[in-house]
Length: 183
Image 1 (cartoon, rainbow, N blue to C red):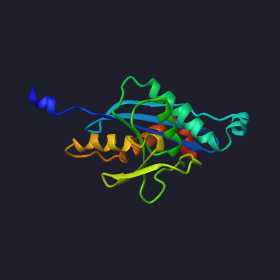
Image 2 (tube, helix red, strand yellow):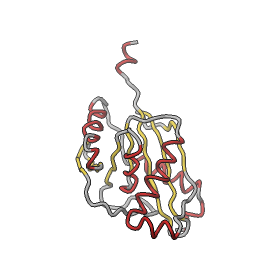
Image 3 (tube, rainbow, N blue to C red):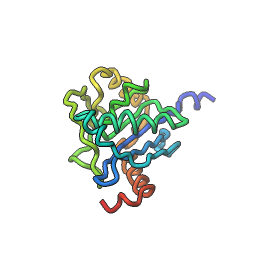
Image 4 (spheres, rainbow, N blue to C red):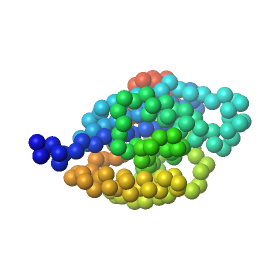
């Protein structure tokens, strides 16, 4: 019984949004356990902002669509609640204003990691930190998320590959939305 207490099971959430030039924005959300095995997966249908939304939201359109619409819908739909949320899309960070789970964006080394582009975000200021050999960004008003994230992994014996789940999400999105493969 003591062995179970020492092996506290953690779950991690990975949320991403991609932009297809014709079909619009679509997202995926994968929750994994400490062994990187899937616990839940959700994806959205493509979201195409209206011309009125493009005009009214201006430079904040990507944050609105990616964080407030797509990521929020995905996280709300999930049955489980991970200890931390990771994204590879800066525009998704606005979700942090609507939920209490620590959240960070993982920066991919050597630029783009995807066959479909991640939406661009105009925000310039982020609190950046390095941990586990990776560069992370959090919203400045939630800078304490960096220490919570580091603390969570300090207890882990072998940290997960935090970039790999995004590849699984993207492949699952391509499978769910075959029209996007032609991009």
